[in-house]
Image 1 (cartoon, rainbow, N blue to C red):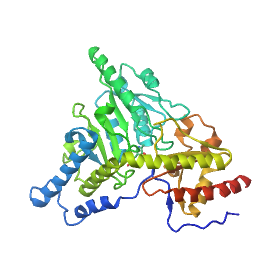
Image 2: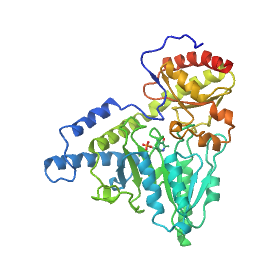
Image 3: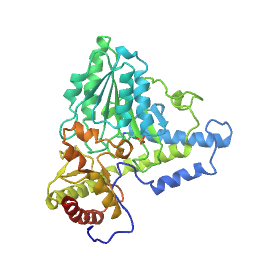
Image 4: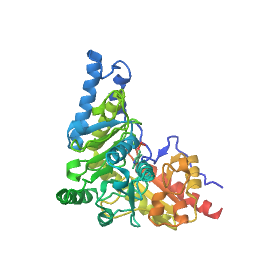
Length: 399
Ligand SMILES: *Cc1c(COP(=O)(O)O)cnc(C)c1O
């Protein structure tokens, strides 16, 4: 018997790590470029110039936020394209048998799969482990480096358990290591960071000492299929897509003008409000976690609770003896949208590789549910979710 609780008309959306709604201000900024301002940025007459100018402004805004040159911003069609361009674009400058790539076991498939594909082509690869709370240690990266290493790719924040990786620490060490390697004529190690989940964190690429940084629009209140790759001008990449030579030859094809304008607007908004909003979400997150652990027996948090080691928006809980997917579907019947371990699990139906890498048993992985908060999340919504969870989990454990 399902607990009888009044269901809200509006969905309680707690899956912001999968995707976010388009901010109305972003939609407004995009609208002219979907309608009357339709010119091709490569055209020389007024409509073309207008579109080209819009892209230039967007590029300058993004460059300002990342603290880099506008020339180092490549607009792409999303996070996956950016990670692929960073990884293949770097690796393909080197010969397979002689080059080595380091990444981690808890990366998004947008990084794991390209590195695996390079492995099949003969590139050497190392997947560094994470500890039980989902943090990658600088020391493990140091140990993985070989004379032939040309790329290190580590995510800024994990999409499943929300752990924030020590990117600045890794970047600083790699910078020093690269200086030592230069004296020995060893190849430069490019540092790529997948920051798709890190739109609310510090994105200053100089401060972080990164060479390549991936961002997307769809997780940051921007349009889907939009993204950026920051790529240092001093480290030219091999393009994935050849054609008309747009985006400095790195991403040919007529630009998605509305998407680019929307991406820049979304990133500006999220970065402007990030400190205040992070504080608000942190309070909500900790409130929810405290109540779950206290009021739902045999529940356990996945990921780190260390200071600064978890995204303010992420809650990942395993309920012992409960099937996460069943719970997700029951929650949906109460108009609550959440995710199991990984947002991509409906595609491959495999147990989360992230929770596996953290060393959890099958039960803990199967019982994992991810709640990710966002701009629209309120305390009232979270209270409602707890009110549903308590009796529901009791029922599911009886079954
Ligand atoms: C969503 C996501 C991606 C892929 O981004 P798309 O825009 O969906 O292609 C890559 N990495 C991480 C960490 C993500 O969360």
